[in-house]
Length: 374
Ligand code: TRP
Image (cartoon, rainbow, N blue to C red):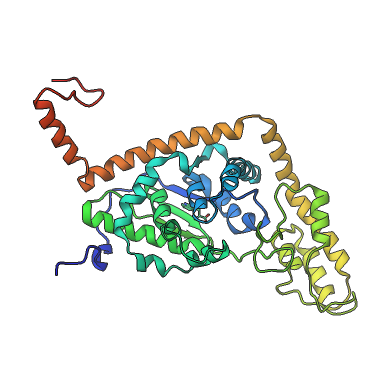
């Protein structure tokens, strides 16, 4: 027996190319408008980091297809993409430092994903818990091939733009680890093409939903959106889950893990007010109504400037669309360059070039476009 095609020592580091400018890539699948959970979990971190890098933000519509691929889902993706970019800009991403792009419009990424898929095994991917969870969550009994390949496609995204830093939450950390392994394996086997990307963990606690469930999510219907108007925020907060043991305002309440207080801690800009509310809550000296009223105030103070920016950006017709189009073209140029390097390093360009030379010698085949014939 010869060595197996994918030996585990293949991932010991070899010197990569000199890293280019620091470049960051992160993003989301286009599933809808952004909510407070997105803000706390990733957007705040992106806003904090993005000016230090050349920052790329992917709208991962090909990744969406791994769990949502009905014609209706696909038809809605464009609107969702525009909404998400609008929300991100309104929340504070600077368009001068951000490249937004639509994954499916960069076909080089799909080709790269295929080429990279020879560098990872099925059992390696099967051991990633997030994939099984995503499949189950989407109601799939069996694992679609594309879902198993989700981390490989993500590796292609990351390596196509040669990102040096990838800030993601806990559920995506394992995917970035796959990308790092694939990059090292590629460099060992075919030569130093890739800088091994660094995972930037965004290890923030997950924001609970308004219903008290562990995670705020659109599909659970327990989200407050960045674009919700003030009255909607007030209504959602009024219906929020709090300490169920507290039947009247006189009963001492639990603050820890109580979503109303989790939100106060995350978004209320008046820490003294929060401290005082917690104290009275624990002592049974404040009603839920008052705690919620103050939370509505805090959330609307936080969301007010975001709403204003969102309205101004939306009034600038075609702006978001232009950013996505120019960002996608920019990304495509990067991906084409990477793919040319990858194909050359793997030796995939040699055969056709040889055939071409031989064919041209017969005088029957013209030279490649842009090159003078013999
Ligand atoms: N997997 C990410 C999500 O959970 C989206 C994504 C696709 C991504 N490609 C990426 C994130 C590359 C960071 C880098 O929606």
